[in-house]
Amino acid sequence: MYTMKKIVLSLLVLSHFLSVKGQTRIKTGTLYKVHPNIESVVQLFSLGNKGDTLAMRKFYTDSATFFHPGDFINGNKPLKLKQVAHNWSKIYQEWDSIKISPAEEPLGMDFLDKPFTVKSSWLVSAIFRKTKKKVEFLELVFDEFNPEGKITKETTYFDGSSTVEAVHE
Image (cartoon, rainbow, N blue to C red):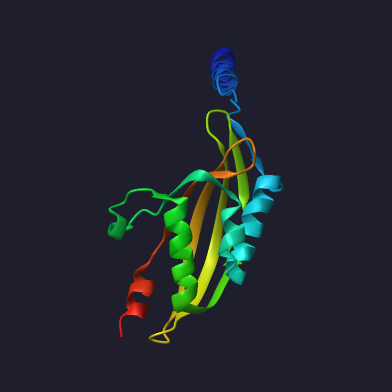
């Protein structure tokens, strides 16, 4: 009986050792709370609060692409910087009291097989001039950077239903 307990206990210890030994960690990248690219994103959205669309353009490469899933007007195709800059100008012409504030701290992600990416989330509010209706939504943004610190791709997720409601009288 005592020998049987020793055998069972030995098997349990051995199986635990083998399962722990088999769980090796593989590093696929590094997460950053502080990084120059994170600071660039914070500055970019600060300029957005000021409506300084010319200064905002300087954070992007000339060939940067912008993707807004659910953008049915554009057929879910990526936009180029020139188109997006035009859209920014239009937003500041049609909306008042635009406020963009961080919903959480941005996070830099440096993965081995992908470009450095900053994930940020923002609380956005504004008032549509024609209807005086206020919108508020959460915006989740992923900015991919080149080695020179310029944004090459921006993907934005948000629920645009409140903006659609605000523009209709």
